[in-house]
Length: 516
Image (cartoon, rainbow, N blue to C red; front, side, top):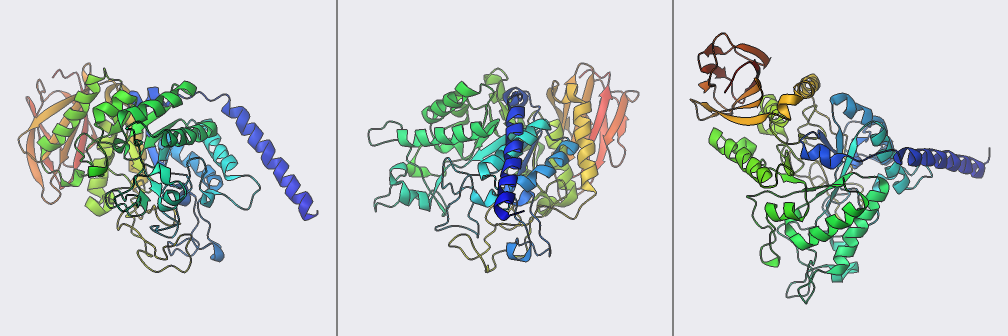
């Protein structure tokens, strides 16, 4: 067969596949907002650049000239079944838009250095097939839907340096006439939200609408807005209303937290979580970035109660996405080993929020890369070093597939997810009840529905074994208690459980016919 005939044949095959997936897409009904608001989303975050990558010699670097393969939408498709087997129902894609190449960080550019509002990253394209990167993205999303997976896409908050040169009208200028670098994010520039008359910069608004339209045309079910708080209520109100006209179930999650401070300082206001929710966001991050620094039960409890208070203000129609282990934080394995990994797992499973897991969590990836900050032989940007944040998920380079050395963790993860589904009436519908403990380092709580409850007891001390009485009203030594996750067995007496916990140990119990 001649090469031209082969190309035409392949094009026909991919056109047929694309039309078939389009037909399937017509039958998909987005339900993500309802799922999320009711804390039923089980979210798994991936970077398409690495999700399906193949590193043949195991040096962590993707060198295509040696036969390695970078992650693309197409080689990510076969891995979607893995997520459903884990119990995941929502896949969250870190930014997939085109990234900047000038004054960049890393050899592929930060995922958050937005260089186009309506173009996908060409690095996500499988160049060996005739389909466009947009068609490949559509195939990925349609296959996710076929498997019952909803799709969230992360949208960056700032533009690349490249974009600031091409579209200066979209950016704030300092007194020297240069586009502003927000905080210490040196590879991006700050968007100009208001024009010189104090009104919304409609050029920026229309470009964000173009990004939303592109994502909705691909079949995306919702977005997570990076650093959402650096844009005002009226900006998001217009964007969200625009998106919901096409899809009322289109989810909006804000990267925002009630206690975070303003990273752009004199360049703009910092919108509160309450105002973002009033604008139409369905949820936000909880204050969990420093979980490993919390050593007292009262500090953890305060954060939970604050999230529940905000949810109550909105009649239970707003909630949180767990943020115990995101790409902005060091690996849980680095922070506290397997015990901390288990703590994060069970907090995700049992607290009243939407669980969130980062690619590599299931196998305990430390996110330590052998090429860390070394000089690169090849770069797609003007940075010829493999820039990374040590112990954090790589968003700057074409890197290996996230994977850790703790293969035994996968079984623990699946068991925990199965328990969440099995006990959904308690863990989703049940009340959150703070339990008192005699040791301030012991955080204990219950999720209760009727006479059934799940009790979780955690040692926040990462260095010392502790003992404590956990007080549970009306508990008797004859009460039915079933261990879900247990180390040393507790001693049960009237009104209390006496527990002995290793550093960072988590214990979980089912209680039946106990009124408290």
